[in-house]
Image 1: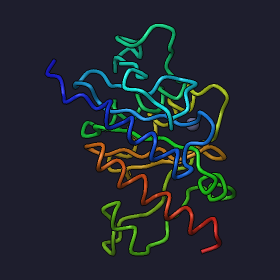
Image 2 (image 1 turned 180 degrees about the vertical axis):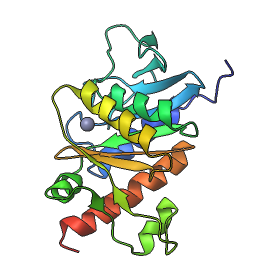
Image 3 (image 1 turned 90 degrees about the horizontal axis):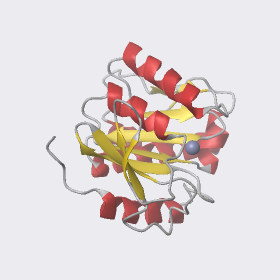
Image 4 (image 1 turned 135 degrees about the vertical axis):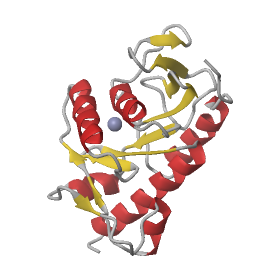
Length: 201
Ligand SMILES: [Zn+2]
């Protein structure tokens, strides 16, 4: 399989950014990007994302979910199931970013779906005044994260042109894009819009 440029150095920098933006408290959240069409690199479980090193990543086979490559002693986060569901259903997805922000928890309370406000920032999601729905799907949080992954996969198979993001209630945002830069733009925009909702907009 044709390998893509190694995304790990960029993901290390992004981990620092997410930590400093207060989107990845404690060791929460995970960042991934495709290594090639059949596998992706994802942050190892249990590490502060503000202090990642380039070898703190595992390469996961898309079809099976098994670890193909990575440093000994590290294991993938259970949330890898959500990343897999996205790569398996979104052919154009090249990167997937998941954080745990205060705003996402507040905005997901009592809303299903979460309808993002149609303010200027919505353009960053490729949406403006063309009538495209701005509803982000909300998934129930569950201790067994594989079941969240299955729910995400089912939703995305049933909705061929979703917004490039979703929310797990009381938990956080996941956003994706063709590239790391595009996924970051989507993620930042969603956090901005959720911050408005959390402040009563
Ligand atoms: Zn999470």
